[in-house]
Image (cartoon, rainbow, N blue to C red; front, side, top):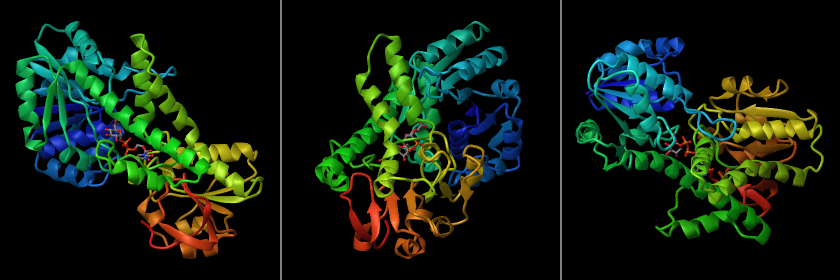
Length: 440
Ligand code: UGA
């Protein structure tokens, strides 16, 4: 199949590259000339394990190319996939501007029958909107479909190539047959459904996972008050296969480009049809406060933070990505600066996202070249992102370099036993002095 992917963000680029890996001829198109130039010279604009290798491999065997000429790319395709951004509007609704813009371009360029697939996370009814826009520009026949993407940043290539399901939302037999054949090489179970169900599946999946996280975070907050340990509770409930043990890691809440946006998106979709999605509102509310937990813990040790030196370990919203969107690190740092009127020394370390962070963090932040460099002579260390480089450090030795061996673990990422020399404060753990042995 000849596939044109419009939009080379996380979803568009990674899935486009993976379709080419499956043997399809893929053109990735974007209006961002710098990005396309980078990709043409085999450079990968995002940090995503395994992606660059696949770009090089498939570009060199001739089934992956990059262009800014969207008109030409549409004309050459059997299937045009829309994978442009759908940011949140100020009221939590979904901004469809870019999707609609692309639909107009497709309508102007379409030259023969094509399937137009929505890959972007778009509200229920968006396929109809896209259909309507294209129909208003042309008489050429086409079908629309929804094939949502379930990749996670940091493991995107693996998630696409070894996913648990492919959802295909269609309303024509022709599009159904073509899209089933297009996805057959992935060898992943395919669920064919109507378009609106496919669109809702995407929001429901992300919102359910976000709900699991806010639930376990509330259990953690409760565990602290009743003297229980959230890790034990998560293990105890997660071994029930009806609950499942994934996405039960308590911490400082979910961030990134998807969960915060999609939970608000689902609330807004519901509101538009007069439905009050009360559970999701609570999920968002719990998450909006969870990052403050590490600051409360810091203040339980130092009621006055003014003049203290605090190291922040990890900046990206999760490990294995340089993405800082909705990252708890930024909110934590901003809050620390605010409550001390800037009278605090913040030292940060992240293996790959420090350059991105420079533009977003206050000027007073000190950027460090290693975990050891960041924690040396600090009054407390806060683990914000559970990068391997951070959790696999020898924390017993690191603690000796600190002014005070106070470790606040916002991700419950260190494996510990009792020790009187180090104060270790996790999220939803019993507060006690702990000694660090083999990290996870
Ligand atoms: C998420 C979904 O997991 C993907 O299936 C989906 O395709 C993607 O959104 C999307 O819509 O594009 P992603 O945001 O990349 O993927 O990352 P996750 O691994 O899901 O993590 C999201 C956030 O939840 C992170 O901040 C992470 O630290 C947090 N999290 C995750 C927890 O706090 N606890 C957990 O147990 C798991």
